[in-house]
Image (cartoon, rainbow, N blue to C red; front, side):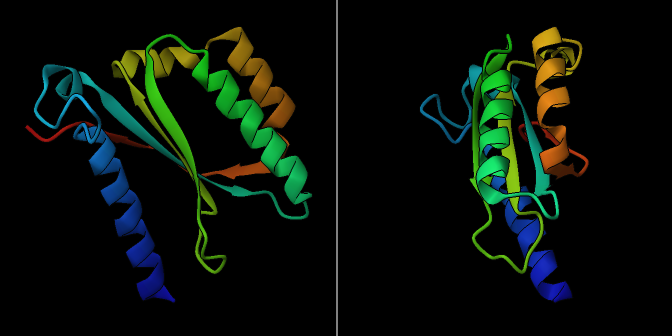
Length: 132
């Protein structure tokens, strides 16, 4: 089990690296890709919550994030191996770290947290920048 957990963590970090290094149309070495910061936010569905309600809460949070200034792109990924945590990761690429940090003081984002936080158990986010 410990080996599987280590492998999933490596996979998540690798995913963060792909996004952080600009694995999109602008290319790995473009100025735009090199200036971004990628946040990988792992989270699990809260125990005892209805899966349909958890899914709706995830959509609500993702929609709130997508309205924030400075967000370049994002994706919410579901772990298809139920024996491994986290159950989900939200990978977000931001113009800069300040844009991501500003999201937390945004009233609309704060309301989304208040309305949806009981559906998740959130772990510490990884903050990734492109290797130079």
